[in-house]
Length: 164
Image (cartoon, rainbow, N blue to C red):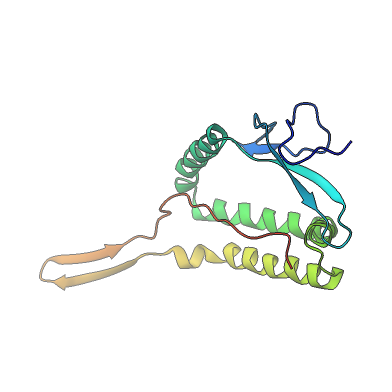
């Protein structure tokens, strides 16, 4: 079976689900896009072209998660990042294989990508000390100043894939 771009996705194999609100959900989209191995031209799987409602649901879910995250202690946030670090190390081979297949990279280059990502996570694990605010007593007569570092909100990133 080999669906084409623009095919309806009901009951089609190898169509990835969306993760919204921590749940894997099938898309209601009627459009799919192939994920192609650039080295072989093989279609590996398909991704749905998410609907506007699905995008809104994902943003809403992220806002709700942010509300909980901002109230999470710095030490708990660090533990979450240490667990993320452990999972990356544990599943390194799977991550490398996905990068090789989806991006056409060599195994060595893919391992470098995973390692660079791991370095970012390691830096995030150590951010607790950098979350401290500042104070200045007697900035003026009877006036003290202080600052806090707080999470500001959600963001989205669009990154190219299927490099080179």
